[in-house]
Amino acid sequence: MMFMTKLLSITMPMKSRTTLAEAKEAAIKYIAFKMRTVFEVETKLARCGFDDPIIQEVIAHYSELGYLNDELYVTKYIKEWKKTKHESFNMLKIRLRRKGIKDEIINKGLHYSTYEEKERIVSCFEKRYGYIEQFDITQLKDVKFTRKFYGFLSRKGFSSESINQLFSKIYGE
Image (cartoon, rainbow, N blue to C red; front, side, top):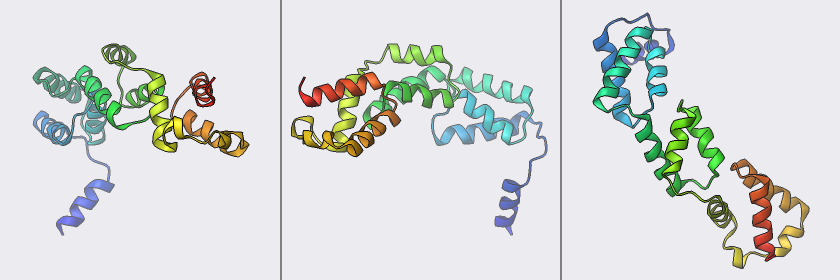
């Protein structure tokens, strides 16, 4: 029976909830799982049925306590992104914007981060195709392979200029 009530509470729209204590509890449960942005917490609380003034009060409370800090989130996200993702600078910006982070905070976080697109595109290439020095250049003469290669890198967010520079590096020009 308990499973059914949980299922109904997920699928049925919530009534407007008004208590500040409930909102704080819902927010801390959401924040405790992993670091969140202000936008993510606002969205979650709105989906739970809390009114806007209560949501803003909860955001202010947890921001004051240091649980919600978009600048800290950006620096930690960039640090983790550098280790795990083989994507371009543009793709990173898109991911952070989707999380509701403002451009000035993103740029500030990237300013303190050492980032080199040439290194990123080379690491992305090497992860997929192996070391550049050992790459068989004859594969690039195949139009189908070149299209796939170009498409793969452009979907990772690299500009055509960066991809063309990588082509030049592979050809040894």
